[in-house]
Each structure stands twice: as structure tokens, then as C-alpha cells.
Image 1 (cartoon, helix red, strand yellow):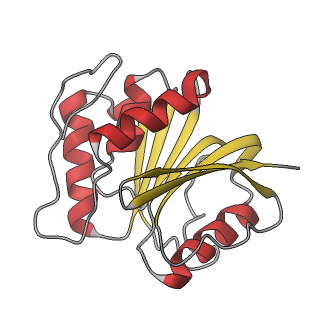
Image 2 (cartoon, rainbow, N blue to C red; image 1 turned 180 degrees about the horizontal axis):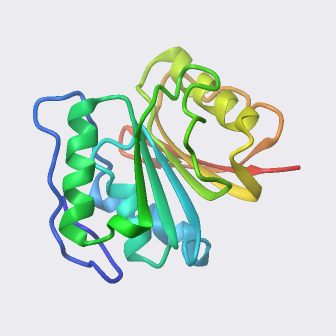
Image 3 (tube, rainbow, N blue to C red; image 1 turned 90 degrees about the vertical axis):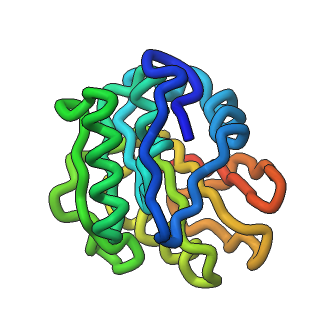
Length: 184
């Protein structure tokens, strides 16, 4: 796994060994950042279910101002910290151990609001809906924020909660990437 573009282009990232982490494929990451375009520049980024931190780190490489990484796995947190150190972006990052699926549980210590959110929740029926609901009700989204969610083909995408509007969904193999806008 490597950074696709920007300041850290080509730099390799450490991976989580043996844990149930699904790193976003390079091709998928490249496509979603092409869709995001200029939204990344100077953005405050929140990467939840961060795994290796690849999405947030890619955003930093492409000009995001700062990134907060949230995961529940201590192994993932250790890898994220290692990758942050490898790229030398410690001063622009924050790493938190939080359960995003528990309402309000991941809000403590977050330095929002966030312009761009990446979420790759577990591929379970309730996880995607709970993730969207918790984000919409969290108060951490900036007006007009973009939420990018990676999810499986099945179960179907739930109806977005109030304050989030589905903009588009793209398919990459067996993975879907849906883009939501925070509407106020």
C-alpha cells in the first residue's frame, strides 16, 4: 500500500497484519480522490474506522490542513501512528481510540468541525446505517461537508438520515463508495 499522489506520492505505508482490516485499494482511492478534486485542499479531515489511516494520509498528501483518525482496534491505532511518523505529519494529526458505532462515543476529544469524512465501517447490516446516523447527529460536520463511505453491495444502502443527502454512488468491483453532503 502506498500514497497515490501529492507531497508523499509513492511513499509506502505500514499495514495491519492479521486483523480484519480492508485497506481501500489503490485504484479505488485514486478514483475517489479524483471525484473529490479541490475539496481536499485545506480541508479538516476525519477518517473513521481508519484501519491503516491510508485515506486520511492520502488527503494530507494532497493538501488537507489536518486529519483526525479514529479506530477501535489498538493494532490499527499503532499502525496509524507508525504511518503518521513515517510521513512526518504528527503536528497535523490526532489519533483516537473510539467506538464510532456507539452514539456519542466517538465525539469526546474530536477537534471538529470537519469538511471531509472518510468512513469504512464493518460490512454488517446495521453498521452502515448506525455510522451515518451517528455522523449526522454528532455536530462534528461543517456546513456542506462531504462524507465518503465505503460499503458492500449487500445489504442495500440505507436511506440517509436527516442532514445527510446522497450525492452519488460508484462501484469498484465488489465495493461501493457513496458520497453524502451535509445539508443544514
